[in-house]
Length: 285
Image (cartoon, rainbow, N blue to C red):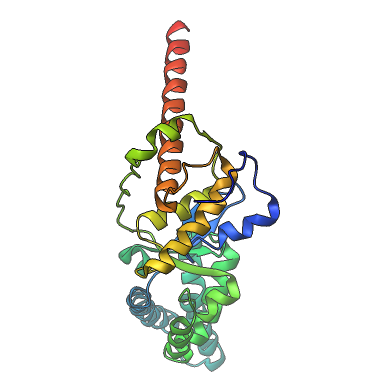
């Protein structure tokens, strides 16, 4: 760390894209600048989920066709064809559309495997999204025996089929095991400096990128040269929010760890004070 320290200030708007480049492909940034980690479902999970849905739909189609064709007069061929078309449309389009609309993106197969269909921005799907997916699914799943859906999902980085591309949706995993990350520890040699440093609020994107780097989640930076270069880049971004700079000769990884640990401890202390004040005010009331 040799560059000159800078006083904490809000990062200029034009530098924000550099922070977002440090996020993973599964991260979505909401309007409140909150990073949402929504991992796309794997191809295997989607295939198994789709197979369950197809089996259910085929069984329902057989039953529905039997009921419709039985109710239609055998002597009226036009009415029989109308019953056939109505039964097929009801099962292949109306049924999956209704299910995904009512469950906010979860078909029977997705419910079984812990998956959900969401919009590209991470929000819940509506009737429009479910209808487009079901309508195109008739062609790419049933008309082509699933070949079109499989090839598209295999090529697309988020595993989207044609219906997802047209509707602006993709499938995520809901049942993702939660493993709380280990807290970033304060490097012993930087505790005194950190206690006096002025650390402003760090943007979510930058804070998340630094945490992932320190925990080894960003890429496979086993090459010391590449890892040091990334650490220098992150430290340069971080200097905008910290003053004064660290002691001369401080390794960038140690500097990043000290900043995150300091910000965490100060935020925890502030929340504790707020809770204590709230408790006192509530007791007086």
